[in-house]
Image (cartoon, rainbow, N blue to C red; front, side):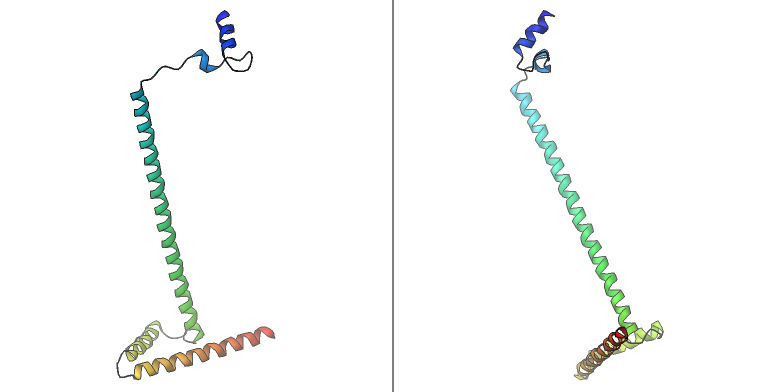
Length: 142
């Protein structure tokens, strides 16, 4: 009991409270052990930072892949909408692909006729889409 009172008087803690620090004094460690501990902690921290960086790169890669997948899906939906807007939804798939391939072949003939045909097709498509939009807007107002 007397030892406890002496510890209480020496300890800078609140009165009547024993401090763990004064009951069990720290063992003196050599400087070498401390350096080894520091090296170990630094090595562990480096491993944690590398793991965090790898996870960050994986998340960024997954995010880019997901954005690419969504953009591809959006583009396909948009192309399907254009097929419907052109009134070609009743065409057989093979026939539709054949028409598109024939158009692409005519564009690459090199005699200039393909580019003229492409320009005409573009103008006709723009006019068709504008007429369709006008008709849709008129139907909404009614």
